[in-house]
Every structure is written in structure tokens, then in C-alpha cells.
Image 1 (tube, rainbow, N blue to C red):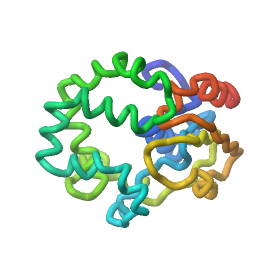
Image 2 (image 1 turned 45 degrees about the horizontal axis):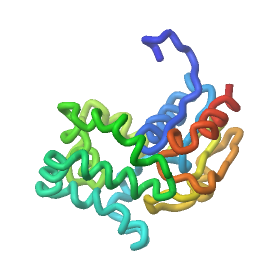
Image 3 (image 1 turned 90 degrees about the vertical axis):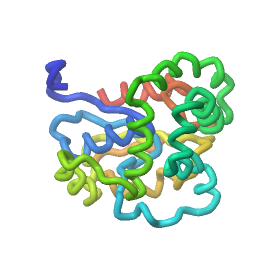
Image 4 (image 1 turned 180 degrees about the vertical axis):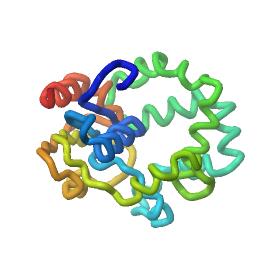
Length: 206
């Protein structure tokens, strides 16, 4: 934002991008005009990393546990296109255009640091490796689960292939204006599966 000369902006995202958007809104509300978050308060609390989730949810996290092993690292390195295409389809089981859309994103899987970043992320979130000490002050702030005070639209996937709680359970984390919208028939990748709904949520905060 500084590089672009933007004083304030609406931030929006899902999955890892949703986490970045939520953290920006929580920690720097003076720079954030509004937030669009897919599936609620997407802020990772490492203090609860060891707590088990319901088995039906855990089943859908198989890839995370796979990446904890060196076999999983090698599997991602050697089979990244096949593995990520599998996740792409299973996370969005009702998206008819999933197979056709995947090739446009696939080249990013071959960035030189892709495997290292992915493996470290999924090991760090379970407390198996240390984070970068340069960001420990931010980690300490995030661990307090700060409230999000800026106007927010939460989009909830109606057919997400990744298990997890309903975004309704996160309501208390949002203390400003709040709008919760459920998207029936839409899977994990909301910006691509439902671009009009995603864009409309952003536009509503401008």
C-alpha cells in the first residue's frame, strides 16, 4: 500500500490471503477501509495448534499431516501439479470449471521457493518448526486474537470441501459493521467460483 501511495484500502481474500487480510484489518485498522473475508475470522492461533478437530474435519486435512514428513515434502516436490490439482478439485467439489481453471494457476507451483514455503507453513502452524524471529512481535499480537473493528463482509462457502466450523461462530471477533453472506453451491475458491459475489462484497465497502 505504501508503494502504491494508498493511505486506506478495502482488503479481501480467502484461505492464506484471507488470513493476511484479517490480520491487516485487526492490527492496522487505520489503514483498512473495510474487510471481505471468506469463512470468517481467519486468524491462526498457534496456542491451539495441538487441539484435535472433529474427525470429519481432520479427514480433509490429510495433506497437512502428509507435509509434516519428509515423504510429504518429496511428494509435493515431485508431484506438485498432480497433488495440487487433486486438492483444487476436492476443495471445490461442485465447481464445474475447476479442471479448466487449474492450468492458469499451475505455473505458480513451480516458483523456486514454493515447496519450502508450503512445507514450512504447514509445519509451523502445528508447532513443529520455529517461525521467523523477525516477526515474533507480530506473532505475539496475533496470539491475543484481536477484534476486527472495521466494516466487514464475511462470505461463507456453502459447499467447501475443506472441513471447519461455520463462520457464524466467529461473530464476536467482529465489533464493527458486519454482514454474513452464505454462498450456496460454492466451494473453497470463492473469488474464482463466485467472482460476482466476491466483487459485490468488495464494492459494498467502497
